[in-house]
Image (cartoon, rainbow, N blue to C red; front, top):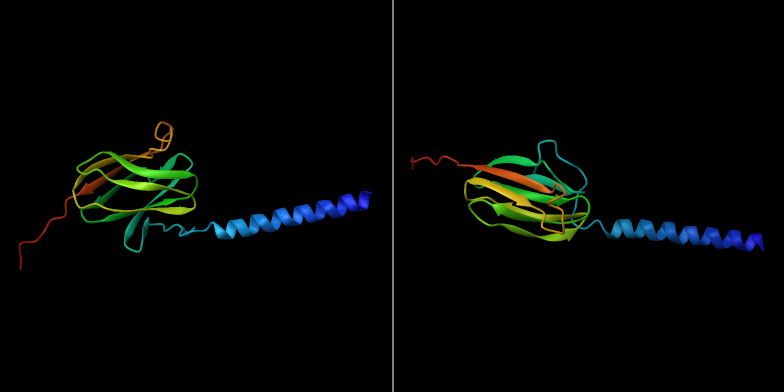
Length: 138
């Protein structure tokens, strides 16, 4: 009888292992795991979201720059609570790219994750958009 129990356990563990490997590969979505040291990928600044954090928590960019929000873990969105323009990115379940925002209006934008109590647990951030000086030369 013990032989059959052993074979059953081996088959069960094999199925669980195979399922977890297949599930891991199928959930990669549009997310890349490598971080860029300068927080700029393909010309866009990057803010990472995860287990009750945004990183960096505060970022300064120039007018016209964009920020891509990458979700490393959990179910998160991006919602501005103050600033010159109201901005919002729909939530996604990690790993995924939440989306990209382009900041045309200079000013200070405070943002949160509006899912559940994530903001109260520290999922907040600030984006400072500096004015770009435009030349009068033609």
